[in-house]
Image (cartoon, rainbow, N blue to C red; front, side, top):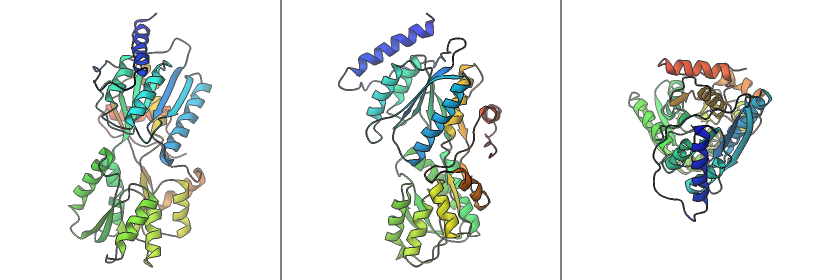
Length: 362
């Protein structure tokens, strides 16, 4: 038995013992070296995915993961695929228990979309210490043994604001639609937007609403403030454009420039409504999970992989609308078509100190 297998077996046995306890330990495990466990010659790798909670965007991510992994199984590059959703409402405790259960399956690669970027650090380190290659998705986490694959939230904030400011020629009244206030992504998102707005003295933020990146929520929030506001030219921020437009329609006002969600339903609403005022769609990319699979394969193969891989955000303008409507199901979110070639190009760019470029649309 190889040393990595012995070490992995020992750590997984410890995890099994931990599962028998009524509560999880609050101690922090020492950081591991993140040793990559290569599969035996001629065998594909086994991959497990742990997801913290479920929404439409995450469902697209999970579907993309399963589709890509199954295709790689047919090529012999992947042997086993497991994807599970943690019970509870985005509970780090529940997900930690779930991850330890997945460790008992002895996967070569563990992908984690964490419920908490802080509370799950010890659990991620346990998996690293077991010799499992750990990929953390859609979050920034202080676990150097893991490889982080994500979009940049400050870039998302910029992409969710600047096109709106350009559409109104840098002058007018806007409502700023906030995301999940208190979360790390929203903090980076909002701080970048404040930096940008400081350079637009002729833009007045007449209100901020807590839309929570949800169309129905932002509709209610906008309805609650719109009656007391002057003419509003744009409502940039964390998606929810369909709800914003409906709120303005119910108040008898013309639709402002908005940021639509990138799912098929929202994009169809955009086209059917005939809105051509410079509105657009911008959101993080659920296809990052496909990139992450290829990144894991590259890492196990001994290729140079940075500890953090930051990928581009999805952006959809009017010129791209028909392409995406022909591509997406009603509840599916737009995602870039990552493959081995485009991921290799992204890694080469990042290793050279450049920004990763999105793959061409197919």
